[in-house]
Structures are given as structure tokens and as C-alpha cells.
Image (cartoon, rainbow, N blue to C red; front, side, top):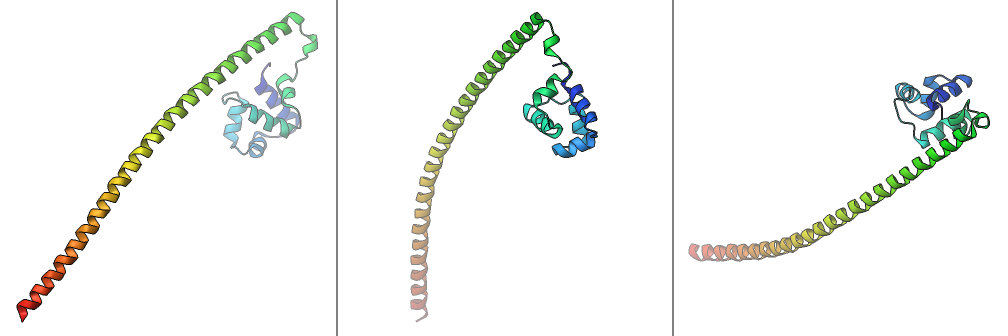
Length: 157
């Protein structure tokens, strides 16, 4: 993987495309594309696939452009393979670690949700009691108002 960013620039030039053309096709602005081409923005596999589709090539062709693996020293190729295998194992371990962290986060959020559900049920119970008390109070006020009206009508006679 000599320099993937140089390879992208080379493919773009071969296709007669400008950075602005590429940015438009990728749905980003020209500055973002320029940063990607300079290697200042990390190239994701998804973005590599999008770029490869624009160039009508396979992503591996962009990665390996200009490299003739058959001409390389077999020992060097074996070393590259071992290096890639180690990187693959490291990434697998990192993925497992992230999955574990994610499951711990999920458990934590599930507990918080459960606690909030309990709080909500408790508050709904309190709300029901308060609603009942308000109804009782409204009834008492109505009764008192009616009594006052009766007493006032009796007082006028």
C-alpha cells in the first residue's frame, strides 16, 4: 500500500476529473475532498468503495496501483502478509473490546431505563392520589358554595 492518497490523485488525473468533480460525485465539498486526497482525512472503506466506483475500478486496484507484487522479494511479501495478519488480529481484538464496552453501556442504559420506569410508575401513583384529592376538594367547594347560597337566600327572607 505505497501511498493510497497518491494513487487516488493519479486515478483522478487519468480520468480527467478535477477535485471539484470528485467532491460533487461524493457529495462533499471540494475542501473536504482535497484533505482526503492529501491524506489529512482518514479514508474509510466506504469512501474507498465510492471512489473506486467513480473510477470504475476495484478498491484493491487503487490500493495496489503501481505495485507489482510478483516482482517483489517473496520474503518481503511474507513479511507484509504477517504484518497484515497481525493488524487484522489487532483490529479483531479492538472490535471485540468495543462490542464489550457497547454491551456494558447497553446494560447500564437498560438499568437506567428500568429505574426511570419505576420512578414514572411511582409518580403516576402520586399523581392519581393528587387527582383524587383535587376531585374531593372540588366536591367540598361545590357543597360549601351551595350551602352559602342557601344561607344567603334564607338570610334575605
